[in-house]
Amino acid sequence: MALDKSHLEYPRRQYGMDHDRYKWSMLTDRKQVNWPGGQKLALWINVPLQFFPLDQKGVPFAVPGGMTMPYPDLRHFSLRDYGNRVGIYRFLKAFDKYGVTPTFAFNTELAKRSPYLLDTIKERGNEILCHGMHMDALHYGGQDKEQESAIITQALDELRTLSNQNVTGWMSPARNESENTPELLADNGIEYFCDWVNDDMPFEFITKTKNLWAMPLSNELEDKFILDTNLHSESSYVEQIKDACDFLLQEAQTQGGRMLTLNIHPWLLGQPHRIHALEEILEYVMSQDVYNASASDILHAFTHN
Image (cartoon, rainbow, N blue to C red; front, side, top):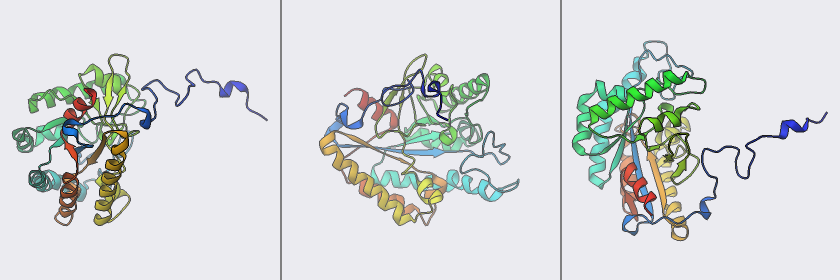
């Protein structure tokens, strides 16, 4: 029996997509971007600095990278802590060696618990964006709107006070959202967020109050995805980043500036047997025709083309 015609009718049915969160367009049809200095590729290095509660509740799901063993899962808890005590300083040394300008995504709870780490980043003058309250404070469909609003407001207010920065960027824990998250971010003074990975370039994101900018932070090139989820080798990880860099530079020759985004975790890539992979990547990418800047500066350059 054929479906009734009503099952195929949808009020938002339109060419390209079925929602009104952003305008649909082909990347190749958009206005070409020119990065400052005439560089062809913008490089955004994003470093999540995260706090995973030992007694995480996992509502509504266990966050990727969190505790997996029965309480107390000290092995995984202390490994995450390793990144904030040891691995991050290997990152900073590598960044300085190759002249890299990173952006740091802070869990507000970590900023409160580890003032020494926050002070280190503040003294460097690098941009801080908010990575939510902590890695078990998730945003999800069906969540009470007032509860979510309170979490976002608290996370941003406290991080802005602690960091002495305006904090205009946001990345949700697990990059998961509810249907209300974009509006709540806009209401709290956020200008860009990093949860949507459906593009290579920034795009305007429509909310009921004011528009945001979606800054796509590649999941496919993330160290955790390649090394921990896909179980590829460090050499394969390096090769994939180099391939992406080469391809985007080649594409930019005829289609305008492109953006390479690397999300890297100090507890994973800051290990003594892996830090060489990050150094090899930075040496290679920074030797190319790249505009390396903070997430906000890249967005500003993009919107002022």
